[in-house]
Image (tube, rainbow, N blue to C red; front, side):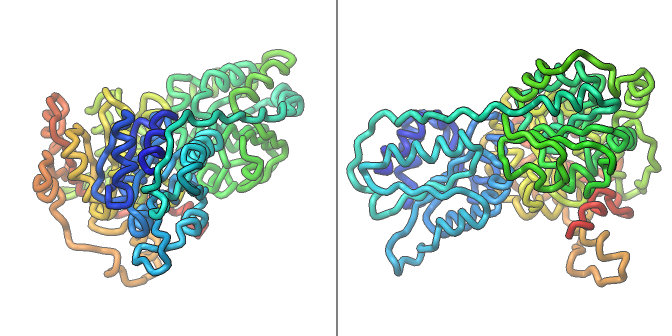
Length: 536
C-alpha cells in the first residue's frame, strides 16, 4: 500500500519531497523517488516542513513532506503550523503507529487539527489511491496543509495502482461586484493591498488599478508583486516607508485582494483611516472581516473578481494618480532613500548600512528568505527583489529559526537565482543543522546573520522596564568559524569595508555557501516590533 500511495502522488504531480526517512516512511518515500520526485534529505523534520513550505510559496507548486511515525511528526510541528496558518498547499506523509502501547503512538489527527492542518488517513489497501488523491486535491484545491496518515498496520497490504480519480471542483458563485465597481468609480484616493492570495494575478490588478487610479501595495508576504510599477507603494504595514504609510492613511477606499488585513499589514488598524471604506476579496468566507472591519466583502478568486470589476467600471478615472504623488514616490518611495543617522562604531555595523551595501553587491536575480526576530525589517525593507517569487516571508506563526530552511526550499524552487538567507544569530543557531544540508546540496547561498549576541526583540521589549536581561543576552559567538567547520566560506563583518570577501565570492564559482557574520549595532529597537508587541 505504501508503494501505491507514493506512486499515486507522483502521478498527480508531486515533484519535490522533503523529509527525514525512518522505518515507517521508507517505502512511500522510495516510491515517490521511483515515480520521478526529487527527495531532499534534511537533517531535522522541522527543516523539512519549513523547506517544503518555502518551496511551495516560491515555485507556486505543492510540495510534500515525509516523516516517521510519532516523533517524526512532532519534530515537524512548528513548520507545519507556519504552513497551515499561511494556507500553503502541502501534503505531509506521516507514518502512523496504531498499536495502543507503541512508543510511537500519538494522536496524529489531533496534532494536525491543533495547528490548523487537515488530517486525512489511508483507510486500507482498497482505498489507497482514492485517499492519497483526496489529500492531494484538498491541499491543491483549497490551499490546505494536509497530514496524510499512513497506518503501519496497513502499509504492507497489497494494493493495486490505478489512475487516481478526477475531482470535479464546484464553480464558485459569481461574485457580486457592482458595489465594489461603484465604490472605485467614485473614489478619489483608492489603494489596493494585495496579499498572498493575489500572487499570480498581478496583471489583472494592475489593469484595474490603472482604470480607477489606485495606488498598489502588498502585504509583506506578497512583497515584489508590483515591482516596476511607478504607482507601487511596496509593503503596507510596519515595513511601509513614511511616504507609503502617509498615502495609505489618506486613502478613501482600501481594497484588500487576498490579504487578511492583519495587525502587521494595518499597524493594528491605525494605518487605515477611520473614514475609509474597506473592501475585501478572498476565497475563504471566514477571512472576511477576520482582522479588520470590512464594509464590502466578496467571496471569490482575486483574478476573476478583478476582471469582473474592471468590466463593470463606467469609465476610467485619475483617482490617486497625480503628478504630486508620483513625485513623492520617486523621491522617497524606497527605504534606502530615507535619511538615517548611522549607529555603527568600530566594532559594529549599522544593519541599515550593511543591508544597503549588500543590496548593491548581490545580483538582481535573487530570492530572499527572512527569518523572524528584531532584525527582520532590515532585509525586508532594504533588499530589493525582482518579483513576488523573489521574497519568502515565513512569519505567520512568528517563530524564529525558520529562515535557513526557508532559504533552502526557496533555492530549490529558484534555479538560476542567488538564494539569500537573512537570519538573526538566535534563529540561525537554532536551525544550524540545515547548514549541512545546504552544503551537501552544493547550493551557492548567501547567508547573512544579523548578530547582536542576543534575542534582540526581548532585549528591547523588556530592557526599558529595567528587567534583568541575562536570560536573553549571550557571549559573542564566532559564527564565521562555526560556518567554516560546516564547509562554508565565511567572513566577519564589523564595517562596510569588510565586505570584500563577499564581492569576491559573488564573482564565482560559489560552490559553497557564504556566511556573513555581521556584528550589528543593537542600540536601538526595531520600530516594527514595537508595533507588534502591542498585540501580545
